[in-house]
Amino acid sequence: MTEATTLSAIEATTVGIYISRGTPNGDNNDVGVVIEGVVVLRDLDNVALASAMLFGLCYCLNLRYPQKLPYTFEVFQKIIMELDAAQLSKKVQSLKAKMHQ
Image 1: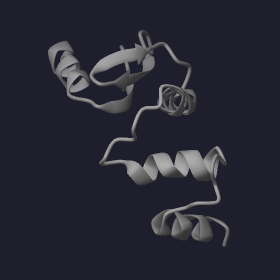
Image 2: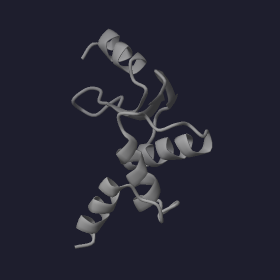
Image 3: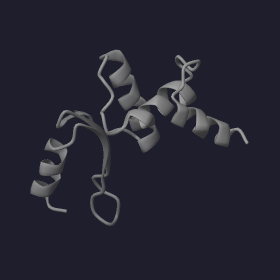
């Protein structure tokens, strides 16, 4: 992927995590968070940390979850982080039940 293509993809991203792999020997690896087409965090150690940071940013900045990913962020919030876990949508209740089987 060229640098221009990468920048275009980042600018078109509403909310996301990116992983940039450099050369085959592992130089210039990068994991970061994008919000509204802007890289807000970079040089994170791994995808798990980037996921936690993305959720934290959404929660602290009181951002609305993306319309195309409401259940993903609900799972982060209510199952993984156990925040407001008493009120689950039917889809998330189903997933939680399957996870506990």
